[in-house]
Length: 185
Ligand SMILES: [Cu+2]
Image (tube, rainbow, N blue to C red; front, side, top):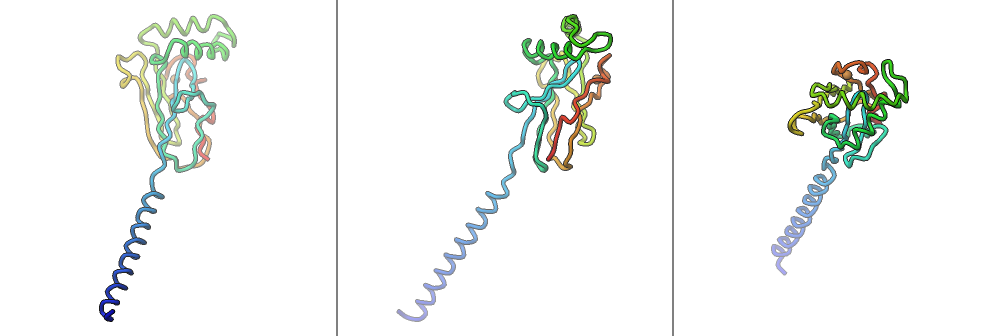
């Protein structure tokens, strides 16, 4: 074999190996840098309280995510939920009591139900002040798009954050809060 031919073979071999290494590195970096999926949580607000659900509508006690997670929060008014879930939530109001109505007062679900039939039944807000989240879902709209409100953001600060109401919604407004509802670890 002539020297120049051998040299050409060696060069070709080196070139093939280099291309292989570079392709491998590029593929690896693309796979590793793939952004983690967005985590979605549903928040329902009602007279007067909040209920939290994961993206499959399993109820959860609090939203817990790791720092750096991209989170999508979707806020729903009770008017878009099933009668069954609404009754469940109003029963919670009865268990807590409000205003002149003591905890467990059996008149409360009827009162809230009657209020809900009124087209001006108040809407509520989902405010997480330190995270700049302020969602304003609307009751009694004609489309779901008008009713829900959502936001997407990446968690930055570690901590435990409260949800409070940002819309003056009546007698239970001051009590409408969920302490430690959003936790970033
Ligand atoms: Cu309010």
